[in-house]
Image 1 (tube, rainbow, N blue to C red):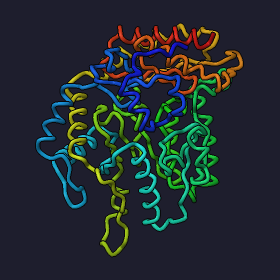
Image 2: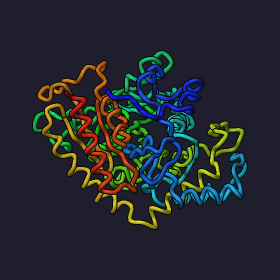
Image 3: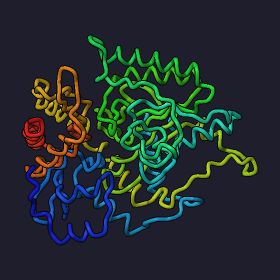
Image 4: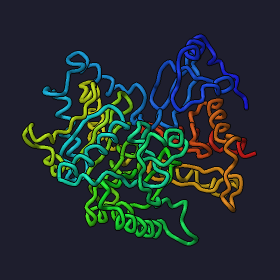
Length: 453
């Protein structure tokens, strides 16, 4: 692996002497380059030496309309001249109210109340606590558990990690966590021979029904990532599962929490993934693309029914006492509002469908690669699964870090492709061109050839 980069400059040395980066074994940076970014421009990042990297992963799935987007930057600058922050308990402001009005307008019907937090994991914490507290206020304190899908990931704070099923993140902290009830994912990669994605969904719904028959009395909610289980390996499933899940949650009187943190705002082809099943969850968690990648902000939308279970005289002790210092931050709310206005003003989803079709067409030949077990896509999210043995889908030994080889090859050829293990995925900003998609795919194909050799 060629790891010689001009990036090892003074900024990198200062960084490595002080900082501890997320999801990183810092020892890796003895050989894996730390890339010092100076600025962003559209779908590109530019480092301190002037080298460019096409951002194929939207900087951890947050960026929608390009780095340093002038429209979002102007909205941020304008707001900064007026109000940067104010306590959100007992006070309000125009950006928070206007954003809430717009979120209620564009999300599925029935989600009429908005609770702000400051990141995706915090939104999950809010939804879990709110669901439990709803049942407690209704006299059902026995409901203390949650059902999550196998392979799910919902964040890394303790509550969010409690309803996650990715051993890489969960195993170390297991003694500190709640134990979820795991329902088999409708992941189409696990289809039986000849089974269609819709049939997988139907089979898995039958298994979920069996779990609910045994556990509904103690379950607050079922939590899922609609259509794509992102950090769990970009696993994808049919919308029929969401439709069936909504029916089961109604039948067994448990909540449906939709974690649209990564898949919302157009990633799956519709503004929200739940739209493809024509369902409304009881809670919808949003973050990442909410501000177009500019600032940390999250929102939990819920129903009037849930809200009213907390609305009482102070002495009743039913209030939802959960807060973050930067709840409803005016800067973040103003940028988020501008992000939604871009969706209103421009044919974003229509353009994305053209880009997604081009991406799918370019990736299709990899289905025949001897070390590719699967090529899958939902909207603007696509993934290529590398394996040692295609016939038996035997993975490469994890210690060989084949995906890391693709990442390093990408950096050498002006592309940011940060895999999930040996799963190479694509989630570019919506301002990417078809030529830039070609660059990403060509670079990935060459990297896969090297990695699988």
